[in-house]
Image (tube, rainbow over all chains, first blue to last red; front, side):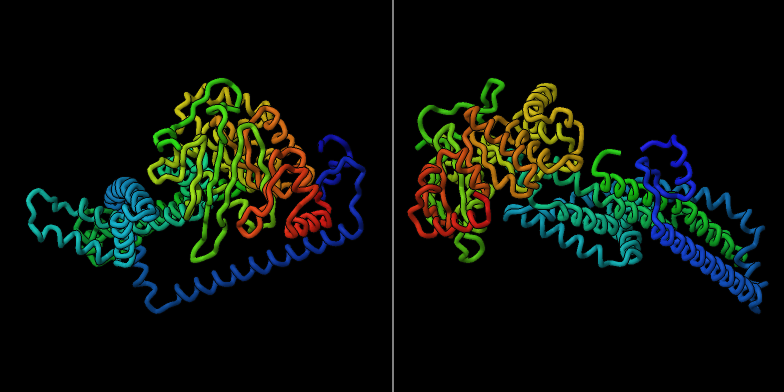
Length: 302
Length: 272
């Protein structure tokens, strides 16, 4: 279809697809489209109005509350925010470092665990059982408890040569827990690949390992990318928990300032910084997902 | 009978997909093969089958008669319960035989194509030659292009399978199976998922392969095609080869009542 003739431009004004075959929309179609437009306009108006009303009500309820003045000074003080921001950002570097290192470790260990759980045959029973027990345990164990155990338990052992660095220990605890989550994500991906794919690979003479590596895993990983990114966003936030061990990250930096004058603004700053960091990653996740959906819909390369 | 050691990857030379095995003896032989699924569902019962070189064997019968299972057993995708299967005279059902080495010598085409959706047509075809047969990439790709061109698909080499029609996908699957220069080709109802219009283009390929001397075993519901292309027709019913012979014998003068019934229904359905 081309866009150069007169009637086509007319049709485009109505938002209708151009047609070069002398097609003129029937009365019925025009009627339907008018109805759709009216309904869309009404829905937009209702949504806008209700949002506005809610916002106004919220504003008056909060600013009119008896403690508002006090709350504003304690949580939203510009002075404290200015003071806290540089320190919080400095601490955030630690969170980012933790995210990168732990993220890589989590993906690697998660993949190994998932593959171990899908191995067949009695030879692999110990490995399979171990991987299953691991994921069961660490998926059930609350992260905060895992952190406390590792961060305070390991140094208490007073083992020679074992680090007592809270960052390393806290990072290890994150890896322990998140590997279990990510392993399950990978496993779901592996199991979602139809057995006929494996059969086709084996029928070509590929070994079990080759079938996994060249046929099953590439498809499995592609399918779970959105879920993996979701877990990484979650990990990014949870790097803030290493502060309980005394590592000076963004949260702990905020806590130090807040502790001096009992002003909680630094926490708000730290919170917002985390949100600001998470949003690009979430948008990236959406973008990757949308791109994959589009690719699947077209069934080919983009 | 040879020792299992004889079962080694079969690397034939020459550009033709049809490789020559030892002269004379059958390419594939099934001896009293029994296969059950789960507890007690007998799928194959005492099946004997002999496939001579450069011949086409058609397996016919209702769904669930054991045709597909027979093919899967012959390729060791299923383990048989009893009996033995021989490829070029060597037993492949011996537990000491490496099944991967056997599968390298047998090409399989599936009903649902089973192409790898994350790989381009070219990568689908060259995966096994490169990773299993150790052929360098350039050589594998050159041969893939040759085969694709022969099946009218060369323009599609860099597309993903989803972009192709069913008939094209199935032809790619045939090329993929041929790329390993198999001694034997197993075709499992390869036209069952295709529109009637597309069936012809796939059957045409099988016809060409027969002309080139490829040894094939095919499970099919296309009776007209089986009649035309097969040297041997086996009617399977309830896991037993109830009747076997030339197409003229089985289609023209069936001896068993079950065969007659089956063919009668096929004729009523307008498929013969």
